[in-house]
Length: 147
Image (cartoon, rainbow, N blue to C red):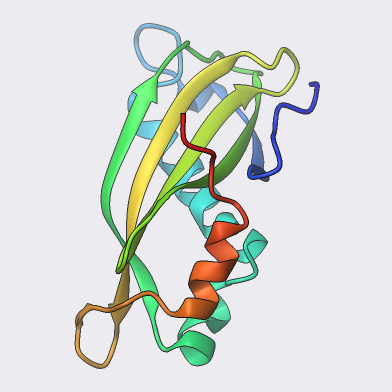
């Protein structure tokens, strides 16, 4: 696949579609997109230099997913290879929106999109928390340009 990413986008995950991902229509069922995208979000934080394993200790917060929206563009079949990339679509005061895309690894065709709102969360107060400036700086480096 040609490099489909711009400076903001990071390659997050590669995978293969297996027969057990199929439904009675013969293509990957919608329930199987979520695990691929969820795993990619974990990788996104590491690729941003903010791994879950150290985010709380270093920055005093972690994130929780508040909303996720999947767009289904083109069906996938057993044997298809996928690659997921991602970037930051929006940065707020206590949250950010991540924009992920699932492409066919061989053809580059877009198969699905995923937008997830991640809220920064204080484990001490059990409530949303302001985004630390050090975290914001990492996110800004991968912020998509506005249309």
